[in-house]
Amino acid sequence: MNLKNKKVFLTRPYKVVYKDGDRIIKVFTKEHGKANVFNEALCQARVEESGLDIPKVLEVTEIDGEWAVVIEFVEGKTLEELMKEHPENLETYMEQFVDLQLAMHEKKAPRLTLQKDKFARKITSLKDELDATTRYELMTRLDSMPDHTKLCHGDFNPSNVIVKEDGSMKIVDWAHATQGNASGDAAITYLEFALKDQKTADLYLDIFCKKSDTAKQYVQKWLPIAAAAQLTKNVPEEKEFLRRWTDIIDFQ
Image 1 (tube, rainbow, N blue to C red):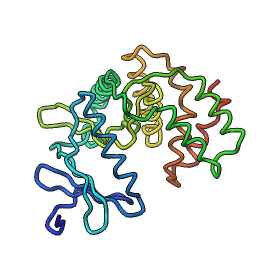
Image 2: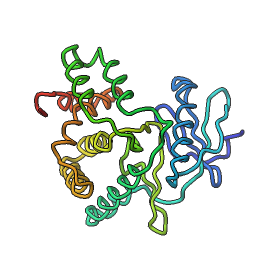
Image 3: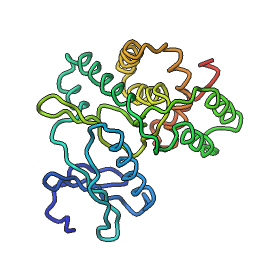
């Protein structure tokens, strides 16, 4: 596959995304690892099996020594772009965003990794970031949380929602998908909003809890666990913020 004449659609530290007609081609750096690339494709394929209408994986291939995933292209703007362009419509957009998340949580993908297993691996890996006492408290909290098997995105934020011209929405980027607890998924979304703007994060939590009939305190019990999981992304400018949220004492 020749990428010379393909349009660069998106650039990230570990990947370059090209547009090729009705397809996108995600080309990953060697540092990202072959297993991670195949796992992303597998996660997305397993989400397809849930019946949720998402872009389909078409191919996994090697291009000039780097692994790539080919996926259906969805024409439209991200919900993040629309929120920035029309701040006056933020609450309406947030209602739609939460509705989409709750529709996702109604689906089942029984062959996906369990959310609690993934959280546990991430917490255990944080020896350089969190002391043993904090990791123990986080694992104890995680073990105490209810086991659910709802489809969870693991990185559900407005940049991963494409709004088509007809107003319909599709969720993209399923690399972190698991089956687990909806409130654990919501905790990750809340933190991603809070990293940028606390008022928007609070609006999201208000709407999520109202629509799902979930107590805020329950989502908040997941926040230290979700913050620890986000710490594994190793984004320097986020570390101080996320470490504060890993403090179990604040969320008893």
